[in-house]
Image 1 (cartoon, rainbow, N blue to C red):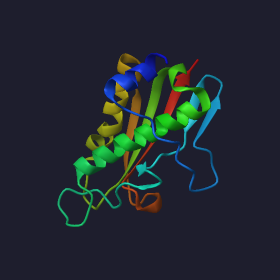
Image 2: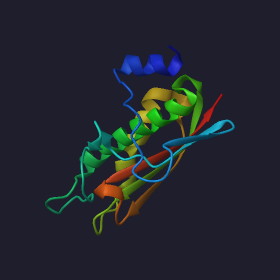
Image 3: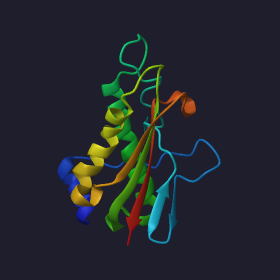
Length: 156
């Protein structure tokens, strides 16, 4: 085990299996000292954990706290993708996190939703997890997902 694997164990977190692509791409690609992940959806055991647009008011939508939890799952899936090409314990630092939120009309809480992913990265990596970030509201995401997250990490 190594530093980050040990930290996951301390937190009681197990990385999931790498999510199979839903298109013509690879889940993660290493280029030199960096790993770029494809956008990761909140997939658990091979299916989306939650579906729909994020809103605070309308019925039948995903609430911000549910989307925050989904963003956390997306980050776990992204870390699994990084692990598959470079090894989790070879991460030097998380450089950037990009999050997309399928937002109902008028929803502006994208930063709070994507905090689910950022907070997880901070819990695991501490100072090495301090990252640049974008949190973007979009009309639709693949398969009806409420959130999608991608990472750029520096590795040794």
